[in-house]
Image (cartoon, rainbow, N blue to C red):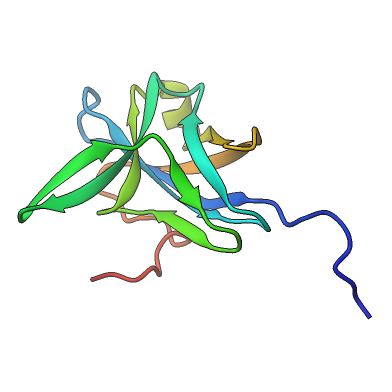
Length: 141
């Protein structure tokens, strides 16, 4: 018989990928899925050494017009998930360096409210390419 002893299930991030902007002077976008552990938490920020700046944003519909707004934090419910996906929540990433582009991936640090830092590699998708297979399969409207 298994018992519920041991360490609590941690929050984790997977399916991370970046779509490069076709214009190097414009920000690229990043996507991922955050999975809640045994306790509610918040994503407070995302950083990387491979770009000048990263911000969390959300696309919203205001009076029939799609707009983007910066968001400071995102709740991640216990045992739930939050998707950062095209058309919704996403990362705006300015100045991705050539090292990351040539490697085809970059590492992000996800900052949680409890002080945890999650290191996650994200595949870099060149402009015009399809989203990675691991990120596809979500519901599309």
